[in-house]
Length: 309
Ligand code: SAM
Image 1: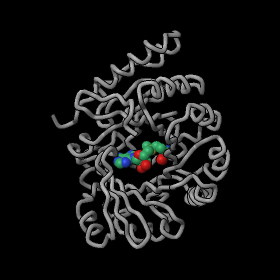
Image 2 (image 1 turned 120 degrees about the horizontal axis):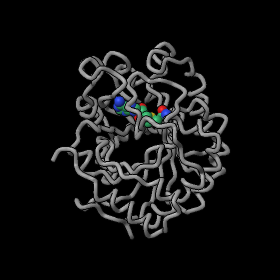
Image 3 (image 1 turned 30 degrees about the vertical axis):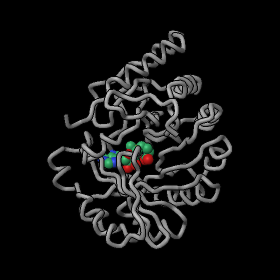
């Protein structure tokens, strides 16, 4: 797995690339941090995405994650997956809200997508509408079940935990996941431009430490995912729960092996910063050589800094 990887200046291997395909989304979650998003309408074509992934592969990236906005709003999403998959990555995954997944799951699987993470914070219709401002819970549920049926395995559910909104639903979500062979990922809420910051943190932030110690007490086994930001995985009664805590910057950054691409084609070296982006797409559009593009990737990698220095 670690052959031919590029290391950043802190010796962190760059194993995965997360590409934000579009700013567009079909819901408007109250907490959304607009992952990798910038105020731009410009989007990359399937051929440009193919070039980015080819260069990433040359410098040692093993895994691709496609995200958004909502990646399934890209009309040519199946073609994009097909092109990227022809490069022979170890793993290609997608993060989606699942609303359009029932329609696309089989074609995506056939095109070479390995697995999906579906964001679902609640199984309660009213709470879903409160969080997303849309009435699509049933579509998301159907999308998740279809993904499991066609073998986009393992299907994971991303559940962002919010105080007094869904913190009491973890048991129900875990039961649903276990029943359908799905892995549950509990995500700690991070600050978002979508909300007034003080109000947002004070009202909704829920520290996952207590939940993690409860999980540790009842788990049959616990694993730490070394190159995945040090996340812990708890195996409980035949089910799996993973805990993601980007708020704990030191552990998160120390174990981060991921580079990101914004929808308008910039390299984003760190999830939690926007001040160190590196322009990439104009170099591809100018027809620069493979070596020049690799150099730009290396510049992006050299810009990576742990958050808490
Ligand atoms: N539309 C896709 C989806 O819903 O999965 C992909 C984009 S969404 C921004 C990617 C992931 O970021 C989702 O799992 C979402 O729950 C998570 N996310 C968004 N805002 C967040 C926040 N403030 N704190 C923690 N996770 C957040």
